Length: 313
Image (cartoon, rainbow, N blue to C red; front, side, top):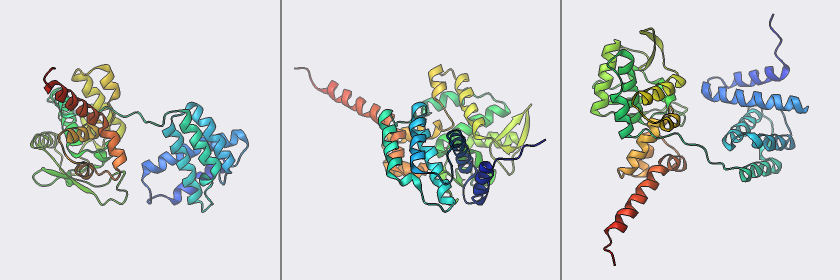
């Protein structure tokens, strides 16, 4: 026997259904999770969640900041703002009480997000070499190399189809991304090595159309594309086969190819605008966080080289 959904849950689902097609499923899924969390907190405190008062949101932020990362607090605040805007209600998140609560949370803990480890060219070579000459091994080698060359997020890799490849497989269309919600797309270029790996995978898998990277079950090809969680597991499993350290494996994620490629481009002397265009970034600040480790390392190497070149005395 099915239980009747609560009025609060029905209100949330009705609100999100209106947004279908205007926002990606990943975005709506994130809003749903954050708003359900806020709903439960409001029910426990005897408060309304929509509309809600600025003082209620401020108390929520104060409590969340005790145990959650600042990024999580911000995501939940964005979800609350979204719900009020979509319900055509005045936005309480702009109230001074809420802004003060956010400042308290930021002062209490670092707002710095943990960054995934960059899968640089050196690391990529080791991992590709560790992929066996099997169906899943050829897929994994092609997946890692395409991710690096295109600077794709895992969600973008999951959207790639055979039809997006150019006839000679020297470039590929990235049809949609987090920073491209309307699907204008961008063209990414592939190295000769990556094109060869893709050729091996496509021919071995017998792909003619549909998702470019698919799951395998007991050696049989799935019809659906790999999920982002599957891509993340492939990255970590391949790193383990390549003999990377436990700390390196732990730091890798589905974003690691994107981060590593951006770091390599910066070290190679490619300017910020060029890297932004290659990876589809809209914000210099976001890119700066990606490449800062490589940037800092390069600056230190230059300093040491300069100091070592000075004659003693």
